[in-house]
Image (tube, rainbow, N blue to C red):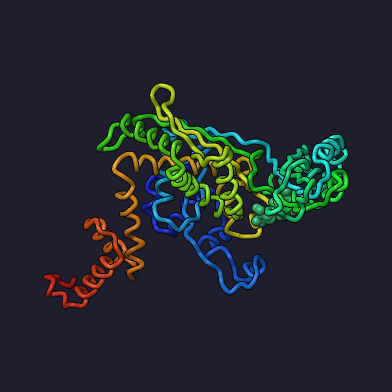
Length: 455
Ligand code: NDP
């Protein structure tokens, strides 16, 4: 069994970390070569997208301490922002003290939309379509025989009226497809995609039955494509954080708990705050989505559409007083991801990321991703509720600023430390510090009172 607690992992060199993973997860030589050498060859990249001129690398780190549904996970996270990995790992450790994350996932149902335009009688069309539900589902399944063999396939049909045929459309708002006395429908085909994200699959289904749907409605087919608002494919994750895991040197567990709950309430009341609250969630969600080769734009689109589902933008997670006075967190969001198809298997780094996670199915991966999102959210709220996010964040941000100023090797740490001590993490300050250190190192050693070691 994987143990996701690896104390002092952050102290190891990159090579030592590879060795640790080799022993712990049974990585082979090829896996370690993939980790060491950058995962994507130019040849593979050239087959993935168009007009390729290079590949673009980002850091891949490991989220530690994660326990989801009584199982440990070492979580690959691909992200350019300092502190995201450390903060998620830290929050996961606190959650672990409360028994870990408890998660559940809906069946992997994706929605394909078929738009029908110029429908003469939207009510009659709806009835005509729904009365042929069984044979339409059969026609959907005929388009995806191998998915059906795997246990997936079409599950239901819904019809939504977007413009009733009785609507009076002002002449100034004329849009092709909604002529006076003609309506517009969106037919939803609900398809169980098993372990695939399913975009191409459900698009195939929509294409296959669009003509028949239009004929039944007496209208014309419009767009045929999935909806990224995959609200039939949601994950829910919950955690309880004991007070002792929240307390810091300066703040009691109760004080931190109440600060997190107050921060949650702020996000529930204010879309301006909710957007930043959700950005904290997506720090974790996107990092795992990207590492596993999934389409993070699809996940992002679904998350934000879901956050605004009742017409007002809301936080994806909320924090409350839990049983016995602990802090309780809950997150719910659509999870449009797969562990097969797309680039999940074509990209060697994504393949390896899935291996690090124990080769989960799509639902299991979705629950892990949501847990990392909730952990990222907790770490941000905890920092904001205590000393403010700047202190911890800035010391890590200082390293990026030091590198931007041109520091390399040991100088990165030295410049970053001075920036943090000064409490002034600006690029011009970093440039000045670096120039001073370099000037000092060019001066003769004796000038510093340094005596060279004997040869
Ligand atoms: P694929 O087209 O790759 O289809 C999934 C593949 O996985 C199929 O070939 C299927 O085989 C195979 N498979 C193997 N094992 C399983 C299993 N256990 N469960 C399910 N399928 C299995 O990918 P998707 O349909 O998932 O589409 C994802 C891609 O679509 C992503 O690259 C995404 O970027 C892109 N996309 C996204 C859009 C959006 O979000 N709006 C729009 C359009 C595309 P078989 O054929 O034998 O069933």
